[in-house]
Length: 263
Ligand code: NAP
Image 1 (cartoon, rainbow, N blue to C red):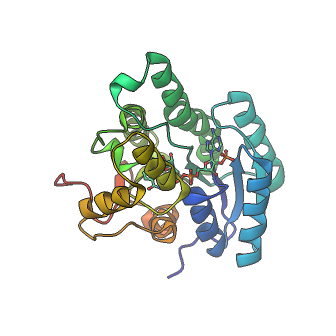
Image 2 (image 1 turned 135 degrees about the vertical axis):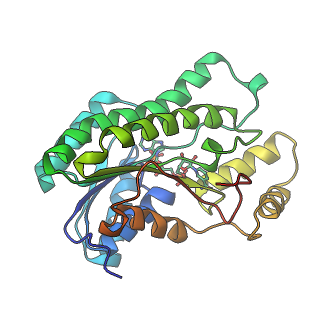
Image 3 (image 1 turned 90 degrees about the vertical axis):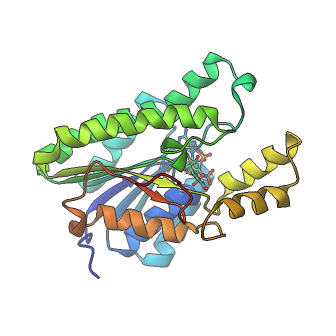
């Protein structure tokens, strides 16, 4: 199936590894021209090299901390200089630390909001004018199932990500006549280093062993397994495609059936 992504320019944030990198790889396989960022130069350069080796496509690696407005502005400017515009924006960032209410102060919530909510808002504001000019755009925010169904030990994530959905849903209606779709994807447990961090935290806080963590999360998923980054990226690529032109304002779980709500 041709997704119609050849020569589209995609900016994928927080893509040195994990879900962001898998998404960039998939979009590159579909013929898109890719810009990716992370904070660590070595990891983003190696991710770009890796993707180019796999696909033969163009991949521009950029060092950027998505919580820093000036760095975001500079990054968007460099993508425009290199590729002439941005058609597809994938917002993403690391996840905030795991813990319960008693483990945090209000400053920790501020940091989580900067990391997951404000980075999404900043990037959307910077890229939307380009999409409006072109009368075409795809904005896809990588969030979490926690945005739709709070997870007990992830109070920072639950709080910040709910705000992301509120912003995107409202924005989606406001740009709907301009050829721009705005959606969120909500990964469930997917095999990346983030999951290894959560497993280590589970063990460190005396909740059980790392193996028990994996058994517990897999038991909670109707498919009885974690997802793979490639499965996640397939769904994102579809939302970015020409074929998804009538899908907007959706928060799509990619979770093996983990979310218990009706829709
Ligand atoms: P990951 O494996 O930890 O990768 C995160 C990537 O983001 C890294 O490349 C990291 O590189 C980059 N990054 C982190 N903070 C950044 C910042 N401030 N600015 C720019 N880049 C940054 O995580 P993942 O599993 O791919 O998850 C991606 C997002 O989905 C996270 O928010 C995570 O909480 C969420 N999520 C994941 C799962 C899962 O099962 N994997 C489930 C639900 C939600 P640097 O450190 O070099 O910056």
